[in-house]
Length: 461
Image (cartoon, rainbow, N blue to C red; front, side, top):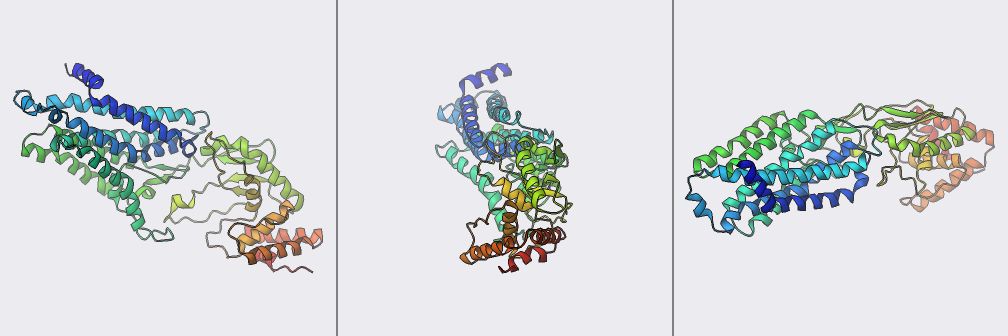
């Protein structure tokens, strides 16, 4: 009987419409942002979780609208006069809403997966765990919305819940994070562990994953919250209402002490498999991380071209190129990591821009100059000298045989200084140029800035 009622609710109630609207909205938002996750399963999971800042308020509002149904059709007193317990009447409707929003969430994930499968070189099982946390989050939001709609059957209840939900999951985490960092994005103190009770995630690096322990604790909290929503929906007396709050209280009491501090950054850990190297050895070795294995065919050509240009002009030139295995600075804000120096024969390059098809976007020609500039970089762990970027630009121009291209942020004095230093360098005999630049690179690889800065000190004879 219950299954039959559930089937009727799915066909005739607003639950199906709520699910369809969630499906359409989620699909549009995901497929207009494929560059953020294409080819990377973990990024798809994180992006699905970040989309909860839209779908959770929608589930709250939809649940409130569905919860007002009895009051809207003025049948509250009629149903209250029957001997059938209230929970028997609300469970099919609540189940229909849960099935609708959960199915919409899963379908959006599967549709977006069509853009990930062709270019993904690595499938972390934890991505499914991270994405799955969105299901109890949406169910909890829908049931709490139904309970609120039943308690306050007003036209404004649904839109107010939508706004409140967006503030809680979309704005509060950012506001708390901003309050714990200064203007230079330096962490003043870690965010409280309670921040992870909010299920949305954003800002994860491609080489990171969410600790499974965090996902399980979040699931525990959200299941407890969903239980509270369902109990509130079926509660009639005050004692039952008080009892209904108990699961959420207990779930929060268990989860909060066990969750890490620091918000998303505290929950994120480096995935050792994602940073493993995948190499092309048909020529000078070119390697990328397993997380970006699909980019290897695109970067092999420019990487070997850069190595050839270096071999033609620079003594003891590098012979291999490797993608950096370090997480980006914003992914590790507030995390102290020791510098990882690379060998002198290796060029370490940053992840190229990824286009919406999951390939390396090298269309504007920035990648080859960035590889040449990487020949003068070493992970020294300290702040570079102010003039080092200018000196590296001149060294890169020397490798390419073209005058330095002014950067947008250069002052007129910097442009004149760079042009003068470059002309002074290329006016020297070829042998002396090679010796000086070899010494400059050796100093840079040894984390001594004197060799690079000496380029700027050159005077045109």
